[in-house]
Length: 308
Ligand SMILES: [Mg+2]
Image 1 (cartoon, rainbow, N blue to C red):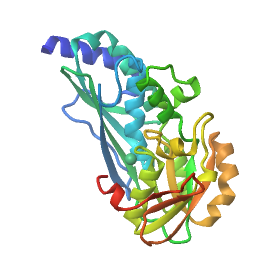
Image 2: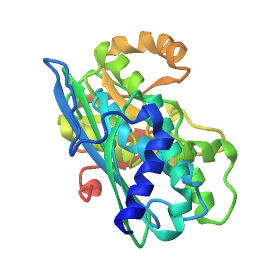
Image 3: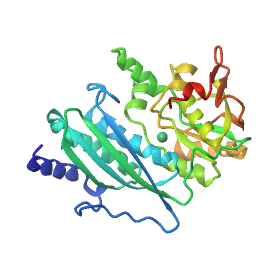
Image 4: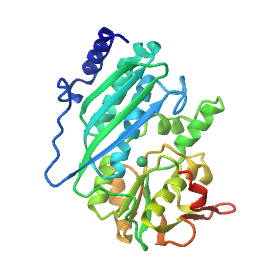
């Protein structure tokens, strides 16, 4: 991509983003952080043929999904979004869909109240979107914080994203209720801030799957987590095993004191989203995560997840 084409492309992005893009034009962006808060930063790459295949998603969905995945990491930290940077590797044949990508990124950024503050475009053989998010928090919520006696909660309903990907791999059309969970996840930013303000101890977002991510949280906290398979909130048409393994859900797993359970109804009314108690935290004992109530019971220990 020559410099003329690159500037044209940037102009198209800025035209599509309108007021969602803020402070672009200097050599670098300036981000104000409220006094007493800490900067929270994450970057996330979406690569064609690794994270999705052409034909599975529209260009707008690819953009929206990439933004949601990146912002979900700020949600997991209970950080307020302060800025989003978008680096695009763009093959020639995707150039015609640039406005659609931009629309998808912009819609999620606006919904998360996150200004788009910069980025970069270059020619590329495969489509790549690398999104960097900046946030801030006085007390970021971390993975290490779960305490024995805490309850494990999850937001939303699990299984849709995994079921949709499985159908797509198998060459079937996914159930629309599953597809929307894969194509249009929403970062749970406001939900996380609400939970953190009400005493949540630790959080992680579901990107690898409930069992794997609960194990990450357990290991970081030095505790063991016992999940109740019968309590898992699932989308229709999905088994417990599928819900527990479904990745890229971008829901939140929270460890919180028992009292949080009494706020679940208020949470659901506020966000039109379920908050479900699915397990308990105990002192570390052998396995990071166990899940009882499944056929054969699933035990996920440290060793099995060493590669994570
Ligand atoms: Mg994460």
